Picture 1 (tube, rainbow, N blue to C red):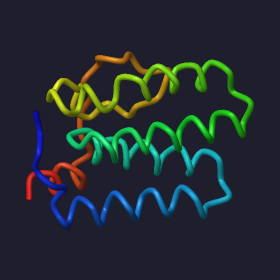
Picture 2 (picture 1 turned 180 degrees about the horizontal axis):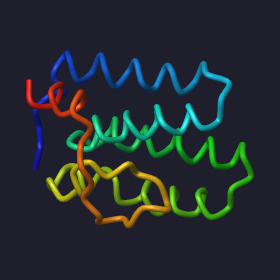
Picture 3 (picture 1 turned 45 degrees about the vertical axis):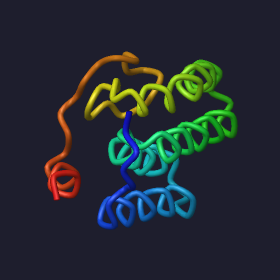
Picture 4 (picture 1 turned 180 degrees about the vertical axis):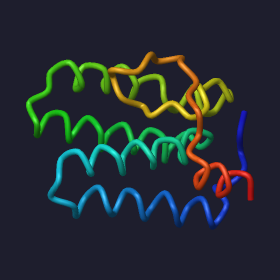
Length: 115
């Protein structure tokens, strides 16, 4: 189980992506920022869960039932998965992506996570 705090560079990048998702008007850009924040947050239960709550809120605002339902499932499993270290690295967190499907981590995020 992970008890370590989110390192400052990861926390800063996570908050920057979450903030960017809130302020941009472009729906595609909002999802892109939330996906990047998701990749950064996966190892930490509460940021990971907060990210899925934000994804759920965006899906509801866009009236995307499939995405909203997928986010409800992910909200339930995010914290336990992170706490147990059982999460698919690089997964963007969207409902259109398999719940357990690992994906390549963008190089800039990999550098932040490795540091």
